[in-house]
Every structure is written in structure tokens, then in C-alpha cells.
Amino acid sequence: MTSDNREEAIVSETDRPSVQAVVLVGGKGTRLRPLTLSAPKPMLPTAGVPFLTHLLSRIRDAGITDVVLGTSFQAHVFSEYYGDGSKLGLRLRYVTETEPLGTGGGIRNVLPELTADTVLVFNGDVLGGTDVREVLATHESSGADVTLHLVRVGDPRAFGCVPTDDDGRVTAFLEKTQDPPTDQINAGTYVFKRSVIEQIPADRAVSVEREVFPKLLAEGRHIHGHVDHAYWRDMGTPEDFVRGSADLVRGIAPSPALGDRHGESLVHEGAGVGPGAVLIGGTVVGRGAEIGPRARLDGAVVFDGAVIDAGAVVERSIVGFGARIGPRALIRDTVVGDGADVGARCELLRGARVWPGVQIPDGGVRFSTDV
Image 1 (cartoon, rainbow, N blue to C red):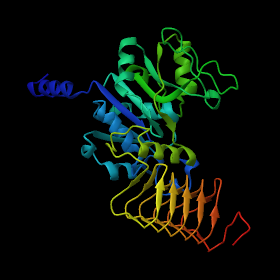
Image 2 (image 1 turned 120 degrees about the vertical axis):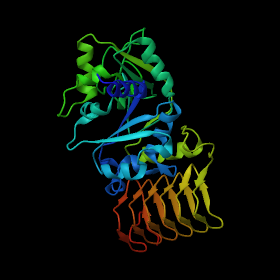
Image 3 (image 1 turned 90 degrees about the vertical axis):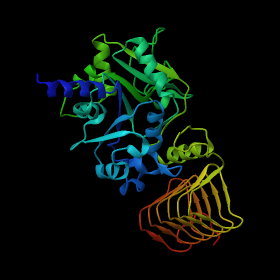
Image 4 (image 1 turned 135 degrees about the vertical axis):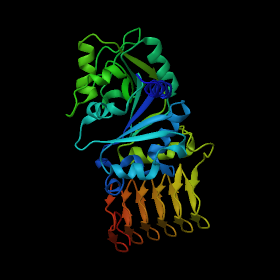
């Protein structure tokens, strides 16, 4: 080895991080359509900033600065917004899937960018509050091949559950059942030894939950659980997206990206709020949005440039970029796509979805009989 090569080797070894993070952000977010027709789910404004920013800020606050994003759907949006990550105090790199590879395949696909022996993996659509450093500490002290963050939930029937023994080792991965043996569910955060990632099959779709983890258990490998009651929410549906955003605004869900800005509402710069308007329930009003006089917003997520006209009521709903809600309209448990125009006195309730650019005339949709 020449002296130059020796110097390069020394520098490379010195620069190699002890822990790297991988965030899987390749999903299409179909359950959140029509919002995800124009933007990937992790880039949708949540309490006024892209959802992914909350997760990246948590990773940075845990002292991890080397992050790889596993992208697929609209991959360019991530790199155009975050660049090299320096504005967030991170070193960001991007690896794009040319075809869907699943959770395990997505992790294996970023292997060429991984140099650390310890790799922390996040699903990019989960809003969490657990201390990342504690999950890493559990992994290190247990000597596990893989450590899973498990969260206890009040009703585990809607999820597969993950039982552990008295020492914290995972004993099984169970599908949904009406009589689950434990309240512990997979929270979507994993710590891998790099050597385990190397063993995941390459260039095909692989599920960590259904293939990789059960195989490791069958081989007698050590999978450990880090169990807590931390805040956790899968942000995949409009209902959960609205609740998660409201929890961030009210400080129920922690996020370093918001600092100390907590309350019943969060109004971003450039937005206007008319006299007599009521903003409660963790409502967020985006940049340049306009809220008319006497409008009532309760748990609303209003994207940048949207307009809520006088006397309109928006409850537990998402109003897309540049959309308009007409005077005295009622919008409840609804998603209104970008640039849509909902006319005066319309009533949109119980899971309605308005596609981008659609125009609904005044009184065009009603649930009540009066006009």
C-alpha cells in the first residue's frame, strides 16, 4: 500500500459513522389520495412542515447525522427539497428503487451506502415520540442481531402483535387476531447489525415482517424488543393524518422541528385570519392561506395558499394547496384536493374526497334538506 493509499484508508476509517439511519419513503400513499397525487406522503405538510422533517429532526437530535433515504415514488421531490441535508445538520444521501421491493428489499437496496456496523431503520410514515437513543442503548446492551421498537396500544386487535419473553427477546410475529396474546405491536423502527442486512436477498421484493424476521427467529438468531408507551401513530389515513398533525400542534406528539410552538392552533407566516374566526383543536393554517371572518376551524389542516371563506366550518379535514371553501360551507372528516373549489353552503361529510381542481357549485352537495 502506498503512503497515499494508507492516508485514504485512515481518513475513511475515521469518517465512518458508528450509527447510520435509513428512512424508507418509497410508498405511494394511496390511502391519502388525492393529496398524494401531487406529492409523496412524507412530504405532505404536517403542522406546517413536511412530515419527514419531523422524523429527520428526531434522528438529528439523537446524535445521528448520516442518513440514507430509500426512495421510489416521485423520488426527485425529496432531493430537490432537502439537498445534501446540511440545512438540517445532516448528511443525506438517496437511493431509488426502480421497482417496489418491500420493506426488506428496500433496506437491502441501500446497503452500498451503509458503512456503519449499526443501522437504524425507520418507516417514513410513522409519527413517533420514543427516544431513539434508548432504542439504540437496548440494542447495544442486549447484543441482539436486530432490535425492534415495540409500542403498547390500548386495542392491539387491529395490528399484528409481537410477544417477548421475560428477558425481552422476541418470541413470535403474530398476524391480526381478535384475541391477541399481548398488547405489543411493531412500531416500525428497527436497529440492525449490518451483517444481517447483508443476508437479505437482493433485487427482489422482501418483507422484513413476514420473511426476514420470522426466518431469523427460526434460525435461533437474537431479535430483541424495546418496549415502551411512547407516542405512536401510523399516518397513512386521512383520519390519522389529521390527528397526528393536531397532536403535533398541541404538543402531544413531540417534534424538535416545531420547538416550543404549541397551542390550539398554529398559523404560519403570511396567513391571514379574519375577525371572529375560531381556530381550535390543533388547527394548522399554512403560509399564505386566508381564513375568512367568523369561520370555524376545529382540528383542520389547511395547506399553503388555501382560502376558507366567511362563516365556513372545517372540522377534522384537510384542505389542499390553493383550494377554496366557500361561504358557510360545512367540511367535516373530508379531504379536499389541491386547487379544488367547494361552493357556498355545500356540505361534505364522513370521508368525502374532492379531487384536485374539481369545482362544486354553490349548494351543489348537501346532506341536510334546507338550502
